[in-house]
Image (cartoon, rainbow, N blue to C red):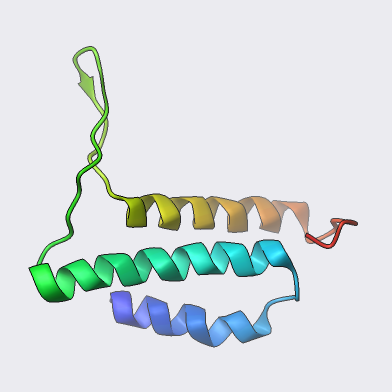
Length: 90
């Protein structure tokens, strides 16, 4: 499934408007997917090593690749709500 998503993103990057934010968000998504794919291929699991706790509440354990995927997705979602009507060409 990771390979399918990666292929879809790489195929669709050519269809993007020529804007830095679009390329940046797709770069984060692709980089995060490649990072997790590497772990799955060579370690047979994804290494999660960042853990936060607040009192007795434990947040999910994650890694840098997960952060890149989430940030890239959030940028794309915010961008879609903006409708691409940014005068600064970002």
